[in-house]
Image (cartoon, rainbow, N blue to C red; front, side, top):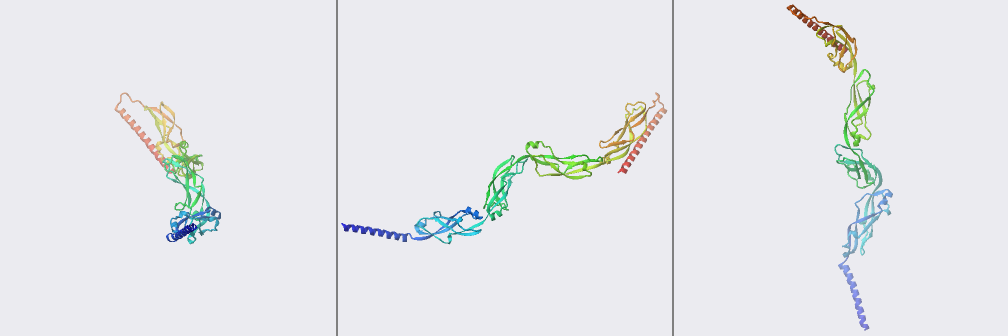
Length: 450
């Protein structure tokens, strides 16, 4: 019985030994140990933010990878992927400098049954730059135009500047910080929050910098527009011998914008006052326009050029015939004087262009009876001419009744009548001749004055 148990025990031991030998054989022959490469295993960077305390910043942002060489059984290693490994670098424990630094990675976790072989492939190169923080003003870029008949006033932003941080090289490439606002067809105030971005001189965005804050609030007042005339305002008076011919601005109208209720009240925009008392000659004066509060001039005009033209006021002596009006046909007249000497006054151009026939000295005989009368002289003249002085104001006129013809007219009477008519015509011709003579003298006097 004991002998039988011994045989069974020996058999079991032999089976175990055989199994071990078989396993060793299978492992070494059917599933051998091999060396295997795992490509592009990502490297986790620890404590990157602590670089700032050393005045440094990591420039790459696409991530780091290494190729790992591992050793293990064929059946195991060939089913492994890069996700089965945890590789990292702790920057806090390293002595680093600006520029390129070569660093050995650490494999913190990997599958059991495999070994990671340390070699040069486990080095990574990291590029460090000096860490910079710099403040920049924000500029707003409006995309589009407001609705026709509307105007966008000055843009208000909050905050108006931001802090940009990053590598020294990237910061140096920044041309400006912009906030783009879509504005096409706006007819009311725009209130919005928009992202800001850093751009270089070509307008390309720089993405390797950090902006704080990365958004700003934008307010753009939008109001209606109105076209109004410019009104030149004057004060004081010219010297007594001067006349203001014209005063005008080189800009006749300007476009303004503001709140609708304020625009409705504005009919024109005034200039500063021109002091006429200081004007002695034709002048061009630069005057500031006076813009009411809450109103803006769209084209930015602040000043206008005002042209002031003046003329001298001159005196002139002339002589005019006295003419009779409303004479009753039954009377003949005898007049004390046939002419009046006048001193006239007016602006120089009006005097030069004056037609003297438009100045008439008239005595009105309406309703007068036979006898001697003192009749005032009435003077008709153009509006631009002033009568400064007249050597006579009235004239003595004698009215005589004409002789009545007999009931039976003979040929002699007819001849006498004809002679009388001829005499009257001769007298008329004489008066006309005198008139022409006076006019010639007047014209001669005018030429001498000129």
